[in-house]
Length: 166
Image 1 (cartoon, one colour):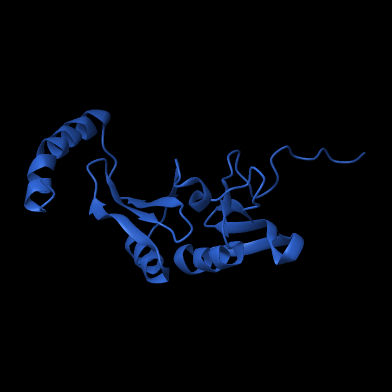
Image 2 (cartoon, rainbow, N blue to C red; image 1 turned 45 degrees about the horizontal axis):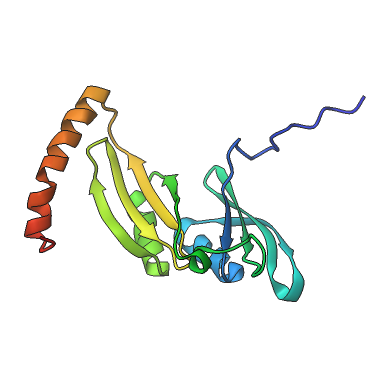
């Protein structure tokens, strides 16, 4: 008797991001440099486009494809931005953050020791997708996070003023 096929394939998690990008081949190279992505497979479409690519970042997979004008496959550049952020937890967040910036990512929030216990920062990749990178540094109780968050947000106007934003 044949073994039952798993509903979630080996190596996948229940939720798998599937990005649409402009210039998928270039995006794959960026993700390799910035996040250490490994290519697990590529299927080409018409005119050398990438219809489907499967990348591995850490223990997770990421699918991506070229945008196809005239279809529902549009990149963040085609729609004027993104409404999601992809989050990566890693051991060496400073190293990965710096590699991503060197590869062409734009810093949207510098790395910081965040009040919820993570070393955390945010980037925008050259293809319009937002990423947050973190290393968990400290386990905190919900009450501790709430207290630290309150103090952080109370200081925001002072930080903005000293940085010249206000």
